[in-house]
Length: 265
Image (cartoon, rainbow, N blue to C red):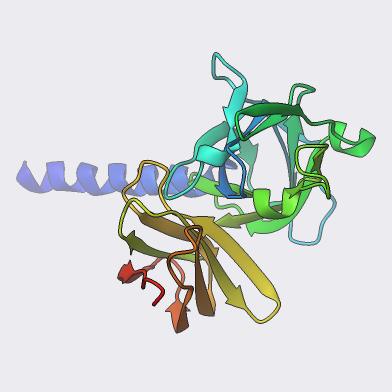
């Protein structure tokens, strides 16, 4: 009797495994994170994201699937999305294949806050149709995948020659997955001090900032390879710092520990 039960247990396991392999859909979760700029806030009206999937790598993408942003309030302050903070834009099932493109959809109500003043931002005609990000990523059947859109504020918000006269919103986006990239984390001391941080690899620059809650923590995402880290304090009483040869591997977090800002003489 005992052997009989073991036989059926093995048979059930084989059928369960086969069912998982035969699934033709994947669950896709799309998040948004930010690289900061020298403004107080950037509010955007977030509608959702379109995803494009082809049956095979290099094949023609099917009609896009729209994942709506389902929060009660569609206004999101992108400036807050640093040091591990993120927002889930949308999620849903897609057919298994190759994710080839993401298209972020924004509404018409977009503005920044600078020195306590609101400045409305107009999207270009093409941007109203969606902000495209090319991103090739293979989806596996029966697996939940997390992908990220990085909204680089430093490159996206163009400051005017005459301060507070007029700003332009020219969104600069990139995409990555934790499955094939790594992270750099650490903290700036004194914790109350703010700073911009740059991770530079040849001609590619990734920016981030310290935690907005005053802990001094920072986090770079979507990296792979060897980087030089530049630390630029916003307080001119401190001097800039450089960290050479920081190696980042996929699915790992490279810890830099505490970086103490040095005061000027």
